[in-house]
Length: 560
Image 1 (cartoon, rainbow, N blue to C red):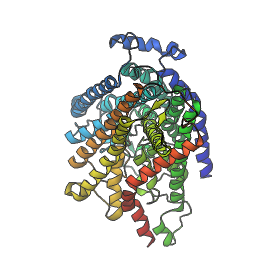
Image 2 (cartoon, rainbow, N blue to C red):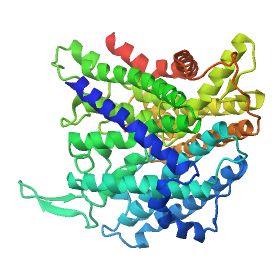
Image 3 (cartoon, helix red, strand yellow):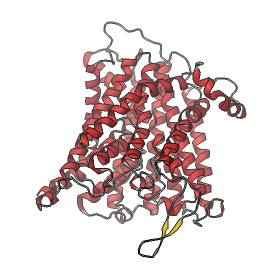
Image 4 (cartoon, rainbow, N blue to C red):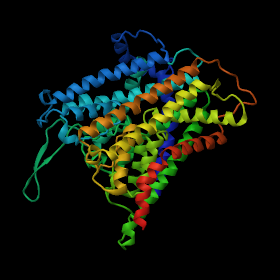
């Protein structure tokens, strides 16, 4: 029955890929189409206000500068609000201002689309902060990711001289994609009993006659963009395991599809830009094969239960239900875990800290690879990065200059790609090693032995991949963890984006090379196999030793 549930959700996703991918293509192709008639009336005043009277393309350098400045301004505004929330309106529960290092971590977390939470949502933020900072940045950070991915796609598929205009793309990402989808999903969730109110915390009398405080708030509106924008930060500390955020299996499926659909549709959008739909389906297929492989590991591991418990003869016929909600069970918990880390959302409907040691390899590995669907466009960028590298390696093996989509791949592009590939493991493994040897880092570890290593490794992997989920056993609201993970989130978000846009800008300047009989085709099953091999080999060479020290060693120790 569990497998049937998973298959149905995956079929629903595949059915969404083509229509949503086509819609995204129409939104960002900068040619007149019906989406202009639907939305231009709302966009025209915004374009007039910012002085954008007609489409003006940017070089990759201008595009990078534009999104960096925009993000910096939003970070500054958001930080001030968090620090002053105690004197700002819409604070009926009297929440105090946020501590400086926690405010730094929080604002970086939400601007980088990470949504790592070192606080409990219902007790640390006023309603104004939830809406003006958290919800607002869930839109703007997701829009930034979409814009950068679209710019990268244009740079490697277009024959023009520019990669589009960031401000035009940024507005369209909000008005034509994120806001309409968020409204629809928010209304559906509200109809399905997810709270949407500005009333203060409820005081109720329990059956035992005692008083209990029940937190509510504008939950449905936050949940919609939280998943559509692959953000992940919940209104409640328990995130999507909380019955107010995710009350039923139906809302669970809606939230899974919300965080998965745009990321899954982006490869098809890429195929339309490249004027080769088959190319887009090949990229999608590679992502799906890798996804199914890691999902199978998580589902089988959680279904089998904990080896140590099994040895004691305790009934584990329902699998490992520790840390899971009965209303979801193993199947929907394993699927949610795989999707939220593949799509770098970070929301959780079960506690990853209580997964089996082998099961925890799935979320860790997906964040380490950071290319299996990924967040808003970033996963596609990373997969295309691996595709360019695969073409380069294949070219070396047959002794010819490699080409991708009609442009030669040369030293400059490979150097920039190398930066993007190497920075990811560096900002995971180096801080992990540092935390394990420093007193300030060790103080946050609540489990000894191999599981403690996994806790630290997961925290920095989640930060670097802009995911935001955690093992939740780490005492991470300290200056050391707030500052270290904040810096990792910054580097993980922006260095790879800049490097890949620079690589795309370099390819854009090259002359288009017509396809010949000797051209290595990248829209075939053979290329899909090569791409899968490149992703897995690079991932294994980089991260397997760390996994051996953490979850693999823990699994082996439980079997002794």
